[in-house]
Image (cartoon, rainbow, N blue to C red):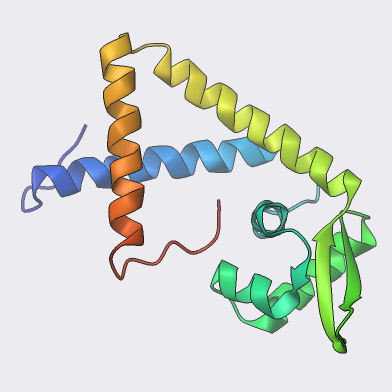
Length: 154
């Protein structure tokens, strides 16, 4: 691990971890069909977690503006990975949800990501695996309790 001279070692370690995790997320999206871009895949991953939602709520969860969601959704809908609808209580609100074909893509991408994590974790002794799990849970909890924004999923 290459540590920046002026950086605290704990922060530097998290920087290296971030690059590793983003690399795993990026590589896992290669399981998506050709033509599905990283931003489109990110939309499908976030939307799969949210379920059917107004496009404005999806945009907020992703930390992007509504027009970005519209452009991404247009392409995904044309390929059959996403469907649009209307809110039952307010027909002017456009909802979006992942289709079965979109769920299949998300499942393939997540399986590839999980396989990468298993490969890494299998190299650690049991007590280190447990420590990693606890540390990861603690980091997520600490981020949720601070002003650090956890926008969307990669």
